[in-house]
Length: 352
Image (cartoon, rainbow, N blue to C red; front, side, top):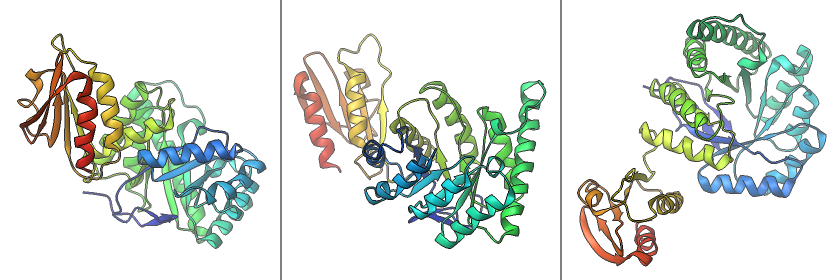
């Protein structure tokens, strides 16, 4: 059962209040490079991103938001650190949401200025608290350290929430991220007992495409399966499109995305006689365009063809010289190997 949370809105995207879990990413471009940033945001939107965050390191970046905002459809989140004036400029430039760590903004009056501007603009603020921003803790056993650090994170977040509420600001989203998966899980579990604000979930600085995917999938999978999480970001040292794809797969795997196509691919073995990995990647990218709960199968040989993938809505089985395209477990056509991918994509498009 999903945790009951009060809703906030980033642009037209509802966060919390039983809304679908939304997928976020963050641009890896220099925000001051307006063209490159817009280009990357539009690529992310095509991949399924629903909320986008950009770094705002200086005044030029804050002012660039105005032009960026005009050229994108996604809600735009301004990521602010240290300088409260940048948050005010970001609000004036049309940001749909502000992300701050109140602890590095400075004096309370500076945070109050941000809250007043956000309240006037009717946009939410994310209290983005990372384990790395807290004081160091003694070396302990791994699980004990996770518990100690998560307790510190929750205590600090609770202080910020009280400050926000004291200043009559309640359009809040909370994130409590650590690079350690167990710490992250423990922090969100504890925070869930203290408030009803929506959670932005993720494992920060998770790692490369491989290690980061594993850590994020485990952490997000556990939290979301427990009903904790209203919006997510998979943080990877990789292209941001990868973050979005993995986020989508996590939600699909947990049954939290119904109108998404699912891809089944055999791991291949010595019987495989086609370039299956390349074909599967091309097909997977085309599937991003589908908005139906279809099951698509890509198999490397006739052994793993209609038999093992008979529940697929559409599938192919590669072979030397020719391959099979099958639909609902029945062979649709036999196609020469050179035309197999092209014919399959044609059939896939028909199902869109």
